[in-house]
Image (tube, rainbow, N blue to C red; front, side, top):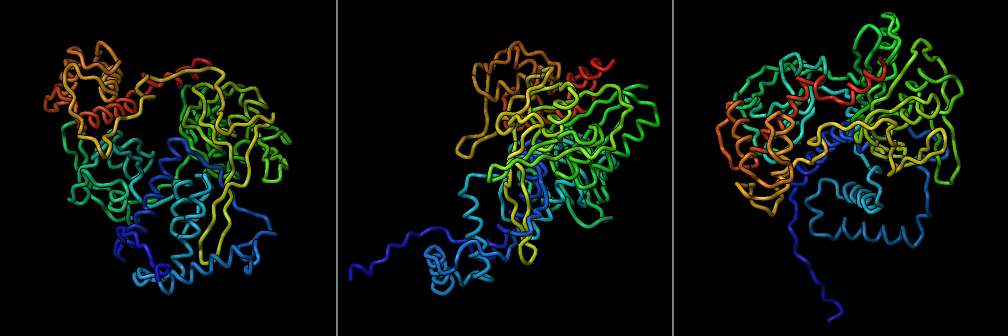
Length: 500
């Protein structure tokens, strides 16, 4: 009888309402994370799979094989005899989905993913920046969600939201301590509906009525002077090519003959948009990129022509947040036209993702190739070195310190030493408060600088460095950067000087 003993490991089980909540949370997290990834540089080159020999209905292994027998046996047991299957709405569907997700999570490729119809839609909306909302990107510092960027011509910009604002309430509900996905669920809604948001700006609460609307712009253009135009490409969405063309036509009409192409913090997007944009600058037949597939075969993508010949001088801006498709554009223009790159080394994401539509709206996004530059150089995990290296203030290269789950809240005083103190010192230096050092030792001069910052911002003076101190300084940095960009954007200043 001993052979029939069963050892049961007891673990927390998710009840049906918890499972539904987790699924919803996963969907919202995906949308938030993709938006952040595209901003901070994990990056995608995303394309539609077009191989007619591979379809979702094509079996890749005989169902009678030993592997498939094992799988079907386990599936049958879990569906029919597993106690907790009774809590599932559709055990077969959910178990198969979980099996697929588990298979992908074990392969070590963070860019391969199985997506539900809702997740696929959220992913594509993030690349295209095409969704209904207010039009902000934000990040979290412990309990506080801080606006990083306000999309131009968005409902948020029209209502007066500013970078550095801290989400305080949404429709009278406090969001301090709330997760970013939960805040996103409150802020998003149907087009033309209103949401009332209170933001904390320094120590003042700003209440704004915002009408939700479509947010879908990925390219922005402005005139630096009569000769120089600035073209900022935030991502390579489906409509980015037409947006770039519209702005290049505008530059042409205004006799602009020099342009700055800014792909800093551009995490990539659609290969089709990349090809269209690269072709505006390359002559027909020049190689944009090369793709190496699973068999080692090389396929070249070449410019289609339609290039603008009226721009006498071009310079690129790139940084550690420039990834994937934006790196392709940098390599294509540098290798073919010897265009200089100003900034810092790019992220180094050199793989191409395809999507395969599955039944019932599901999709598989998978890595299908590694891309190489026109000259055959590999980018993956290496990045592209700038030809003219220019760094911003050191605070932008210091990760914002966050409280870990097993740690006590920050509580730093004079003579303490920590990474959080180092961040505070660099932040104060950027903001013009001149601490005596930036090595993480909490000196008297650092304390005085912090007190002055708090007094000037009408924040209650507290020399103890807490989690709230970190969020206040991080928010102040975002606001200062956006208000006084000409002063702080040394990379853009170098590009303007280069073209003059």
